[in-house]
Length: 199
Image 1 (cartoon, rainbow, N blue to C red):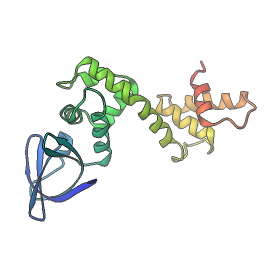
Image 2 (cartoon, helix red, strand yellow):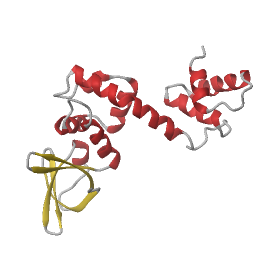
Image 3 (cartoon, rainbow, N blue to C red):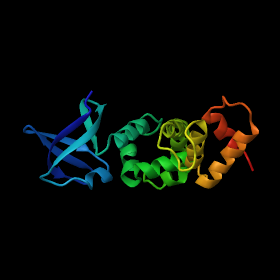
Image 4 (cartoon, helix red, strand yellow):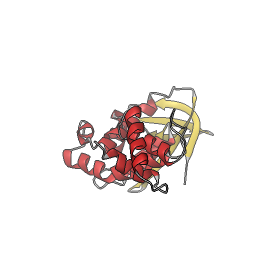
């Protein structure tokens, strides 16, 4: 499987770029964010995804591997093809897209031409669970939050922050849950569940 292509940028079009690699020109379709970072005559490395269509292999290029991975996930959603996935990533930054999915805000996706209400809702439904798990997983082992000791409590505070709680409130909620429970074996997921339900 191809991971990336690196070469000289020969031409930048409205939705594609041509890379010269050892005298061979490779045409890659790319989202607007990636194209805006390129300059003709300069070198570039694009992380790629490829799709077989009829008797052709179509390459898609992205400036970051995370953007490429998001494109591939979108293509796995029923009713979303490469063209729609590229349109979404051309109009919504990966970070804003991720936030819209986690917030369940399908209306943000509906603003993209070619993405109807049902398709937008399906994208949110299909991707939300996986993105939530990744967010929680990325929190564990991340740098400590000021004033919170390492361990499950610190992980729980970080998770609550991802869910939208201010850090002071997150710390207070977790501290009260820990003080009320004698089970020292509670893991971060339990603390998050209990602390988020407090009033």
